[in-house]
Image 1 (cartoon, helix red, strand yellow):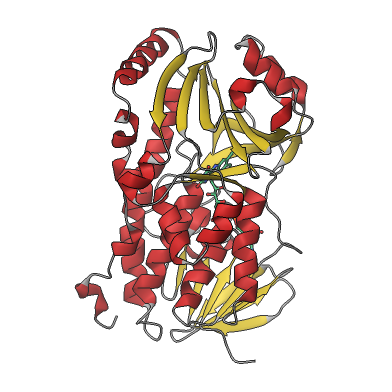
Image 2 (cartoon, helix red, strand yellow):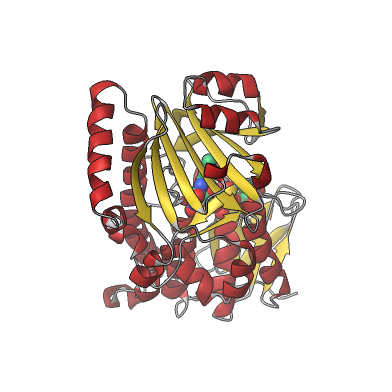
Length: 405
Ligand SMILES: Cc1cc2nc3c(=O)[nH]c(=O)nc-3n(C[C@H](O)[C@H](O)[C@H](O)COP(=O)(O)OP(=O)(O)OC[C@H]3O[C@@H](n4cnc5c(N)ncnc54)[C@H](O)[C@@H]3O)c2cc1C
């Protein structure tokens, strides 16, 4: 077997999107994935138009339209009274505004769409049960070793190996990510089990003190995805560990009865401790760089971590496509551009973390401001033009970075 052009560590949403973008340019890709089989959390994911554009370019529109939902609106509600604080039209307005829709989809379905397409592609080889453990950049190639002591050689190595990235540890070595003091509880319930107000085709956001709740339909509208975020001084052990419903229900006991009743319908909760990092000044060295959560783990309060990984994938491909033999300048240019963009998104997500959980008079002021936006439908969407209107497809490698390294 000849050497691949590029090795991607990690077959999550970011790694698979990257493999598909690179394969579209004719590169041969080896994806090393440590898990034994494809696996994604039993929960939903929102895909803003900024990322949906790219999935369209990968020819995935049809498959996505089969499983994704396209909510009509975003509704923001007060946790105590259940009153509407703000509402914004979503689809199809957002598609008219940014030429791509706002989708919500079950993660396992999105992952399967990407994984199936990658497996069908002659340029992509996905190796499961293959955990990258170390690598050497000899100036011409990167030689990667897995935990089973298999060696692979390629021109470039991309660490798309998630929050606890081994590649990041070996390249930047800036320590573990920061626990943010918040835990996300995730679950899905059958839509026919829930109150009518939750069956609407909307993304709902409920704001309480030190907690919030998000819900939206997935799986062809058969299931309702629920994410409840609470404060916790210590992170739960493990990743996606089972959550004790009693511990969650106590945080929501004074909420509007619709919410407490909804939460009682859930039979199985999984918990995620939420981590992020301050934006890093660099992501790579030589022929190695990072992508997705490995590069820029962020709080999920703008629903953009996965979308940023997809944007990274497109831009990284656009920058290296004519520079495989000497990719170092292009990789640094990719980092430069993406560090700026992802830092802005990550910091905006942190601001939401504060804004969503306000108490006392600050909460009242926030609610008044949100209610004022009710008189101007579309205002909330306009506020996020910088986010959803970003066109990764238009980014080009700056001319100064095209010279040999
Ligand atoms: C509660 C919550 C809600 C969210 N909601 C949204 C949302 O609505 N919209 C959105 O865009 N984002 C959302 N996100 C963020 C999104 O889930 C992540 O940003 C995204 O999944 C990151 O993808 P990734 O491919 O970079 O990393 P991962 O999905 O973590 O994939 C990394 C892969 O690398 C593999 N791996 C790890 N180490 C190695 C190794 N040494 N060798 C080989 N393989 C390895 C892992 O097994 C894994 O398969 C949310 C996150 C959370 C926690």
